Length: 114
Image (cartoon, rainbow, N blue to C red; front, side, top):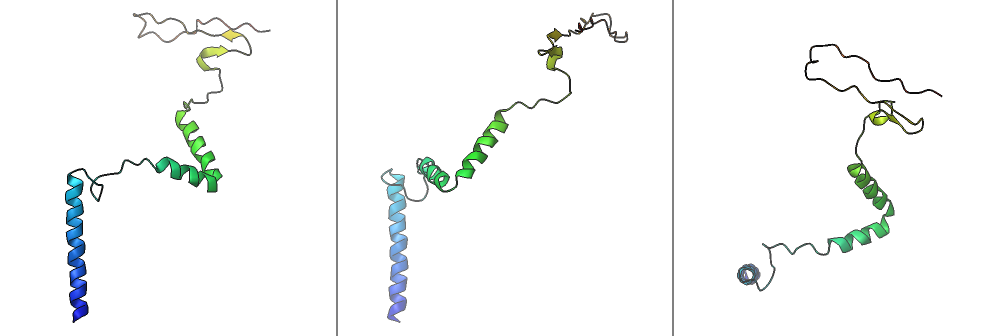
């Protein structure tokens, strides 16, 4: 029966200690359960993690590269009608305000060959 009283006393003591710590946290004296610590040590653990798994660094770099790369559709023709290797540029004809109903015409000059 004495073990029961000791166990009950220990639980009550822990609850009182928890309430005192929460009170001290609300006053700004300590960090206990409710406030975040700021996460300043995350960078340190990431470097240690990369020390033991260097392939993870390559995965992160590739994900960053793919996130920053602009996706362009592959059409097989030079972008914007400019062929830098051939030295040619094809410009589309200007649109006139009264030509919405007219079928499109191909008045663009042919690129020089040779």
